Amino acid sequence: MSGPLAGHVTAKLKRSLKALAVVVAVGAIAIFAARPFVPFSGGEAPLDTAPPAYMDMESEGGIHPQAESSDSESEDRARRPVEEVLQVGAGEKLMDLLGRAGVPSVEALQAIDSLVTIFDPRNLKAGQRVTVTFDPSPDGFGQGEFHQISLPADPIRDVAATRKAKGGGFKPEESKRQVTRQVAHYSGTIKSSLYESAMAAGVSPQVIIAMIKALSFDVDFQRDIQSSDTFEVMFEGWYDTRGKLVRQGDLLYAGLDLSGAEIQLYRYDDGQGGTDFFNAKGESAKKALLKTPVDGAKITSGFGMRHHPILGYSKMHKGIDFGVPPGTPIQAAGDGTVEMAGPNGSYGNYVRLRHASGFGTAYAHMSRIAQGIHTGRRVMQGQIIGYVGATGRATGPHLHYEVLQGNAQVNPMSIKVPTGVKLAGREFDHYQAFKRQTDLIMASIPSATHVAIMAGKPGFKAN
Ligand SMILES: [Zn+2]
Image 1 (cartoon, rainbow, N blue to C red):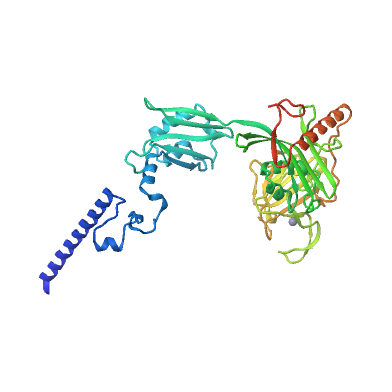
Image 2: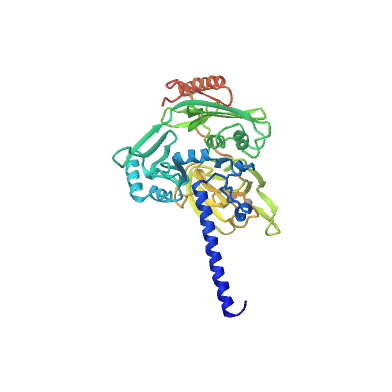
């Protein structure tokens, strides 16, 4: 065939073939939809060579392609409520989150109205997990009606808004986890840093940070700690029935044995409304300046003349460089006032604090300055003022730390810092009795365990 007629016939034939193909395809889908997991026994070549993904291979003697897709399991799933766990985005409101989960806005509003009677939505935190539950789908596909929103309101309380069984609307529901106040005791040997070794022993990061804060006045974490030194810590916490720590309480004791030199710090209420850590001699741990403003620090460059790695010539290094991973929190070395906070040339992001007794401290190359650290603000010793980085003229992440006497940089390792309070007289006797009791309790709790201590037991706050 040739010419226009031939062309016409060819086009017509093509259309017919297309239509036939559509009919065959629709037919096949219809058959599969009606009997989704029954093997197709027809002899159609296209189906034999390219079986649909949802065909049950097992009944043909092949290997089951997906363990989860057997008949009974899919039916079970269809009858189960559909649970979606969503993480709260930065600045996201419950309304947005429910919208994201596919909840119609009228129902979302009703559920939130009910939830706010037991939960303050301002306490919603970015990154927090919220569970949105839907009823089982009536037809086995997708999800049914929105049923519930639930979230942990705090470490011991879960809150939810659940669709009422009758009459429409939602009702608030609250469940409290059973928790008991216990005292935990951990000890171990330091391998590389206190942080890593205590983490390895099972101590939570919050407890370790509290420990480092308390010990920072006495311990130069770079110079004083040798591998095979030991640590000991005791703290109170609230534990659930499964033994999980749900809320950390006060640090009660922090101890280090540094090659035989013991540092023991006891949390003690001084009777004047203040609580502080005191050493075995009854001296408060708090001193004018911390020895190291970061934990686990290695001094990578000391105070004095050195060959500058970037400038290429020898230059006086007027501070101390601490090599620590980027993002490590930097603590204010002492109580004081922020004299400067912001970018400062080759220092990068920089904070300078002015302390009593004429001292100043400066911190450079921060990745970022902590929130609320502005010129004129008061800071407390140990408060986080920024995070280690490599801004300004730095070859890599480290903290450049300077101590100033007046306006001149001095060697932080050589200055003498004044000590704080010393307990005396009756107060010291009280403290001695308290200390003995703490030692006894600690000796009675095996390491890496926690025990319930009766509320009201002397020496421990009852709450
Ligand atoms: Zn430096």
